[in-house]
Length: 451
Image (cartoon, rainbow, N blue to C red):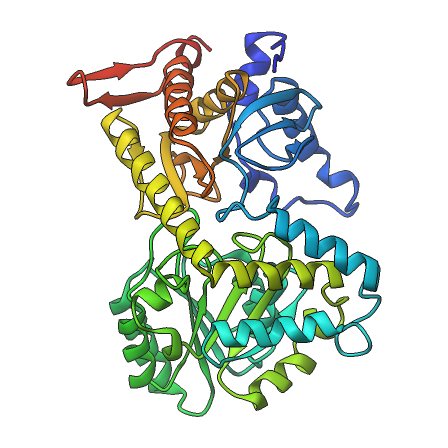
């Protein structure tokens, strides 16, 4: 992948600014007022420093061919796809997809509230219910829509929603759609949760409070003390929602993620899940404890009632993925995945890379300043490695990072090669990090400082 930077002035322009700068455009013409964003984006694109909207030309396996937003090609090792259990190209998954197409075609052709369900989607609900030890399940066409629905479907204008400050967009937008009584607490700070709950209950004992967290936060790869959150909810008569999008299916002996590891599966009032991380398809679900809550959610959550249902192909794929994940093969794949995660984190730390969070399929590698990170991302692609760059405002300013996504099928040589190329890319872009093997800091002061 090669980009020709026309001059240092254009490169400098591409190294500054953020998406936050263009979030609230001004003016009466809603079309014309977004032009400054495009101008900034296109400057980055032409410099090869726009890291988003890549596309794959081949299956998203451990190696693939992809193109950036400007059509430039990169082929090499792939640590940017969300396929933690390496099921997206599994032969059994492909087989059930083909069988579903032959029997049902490719489209659900309706909302689940009307005629959009199929025999396969109803079987999928039962399969997930069994996996979650009897919880009632409602399906959604995307994981985002499931998270949105879990909040919007139950919360009403006089209710309250208390979210971890790093809660996913779908959860925050669901809250905004439902009530103005929205509060945020410090990341993973249970004491902050308890203080806020006490203040709410001091003035309102009549309305509901929903406490929202995630079992694995995707930008930081860390997890809350779910038991402590449950205790706080019990003390102040609040409801607990846990979004398990990133760890269900791929973490724990039984695949129940941190809810399982902490023994809290039946202590969460609402569980949100996504199929796109470990289950080889788009889609998601909300799990609740009663049939009454399930039926209410089906008809009062907008993204269920007014969206087309999962296609029969998606339903067949996800059901087969659950079957694999719940089998001995699934246990072996989870072990292979965790072995890869621990190996990568250990080798990265030995090499002086700053790895954030706890072991999970998401390995955040801190780069630092946004400008240097953009250069490092470009260089990494040029070296034949693909990893997603995340920058402000998705993460704190000055805390840009590679969000490396590990798969069960990654090999040790592929992991070693990524680390080697990542160090080369960061050296070339002006990053500073500690080389523990040599005992000396690596001063990477080439292109970024020159620019």
